[in-house]
Figure 1 (cartoon, rainbow, N blue to C red):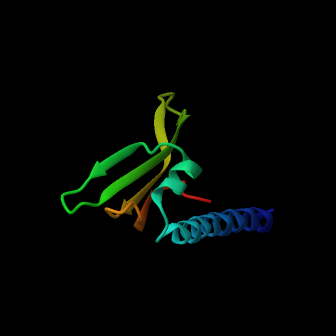
Figure 2 (cartoon, one colour):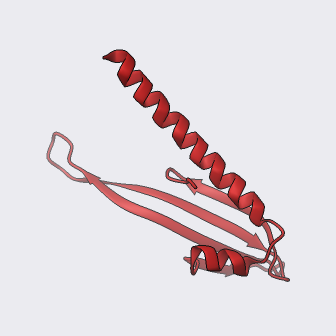
Length: 106
């Protein structure tokens, strides 16, 4: 029984790491391309910030609120999310990206 549990935990960990790696590889393919293609692919960003250097940060926030009830009976909210920020040049070309969160996967 312990071996089965260990195998399940191991597979979950490996799958999670592979998914994040797949997202990173996917984002790498967008660098050097127009941000308009990414907007068509993911939809309207959650936030757009113009920087003083002429670049623009496009941010997509994907989140789910999950609640659980601990033994005490109170409700705690745990946010599962992925925040992806893309740095776009003046000519609307993706320069770099950054991901943050506990649910970033491709």
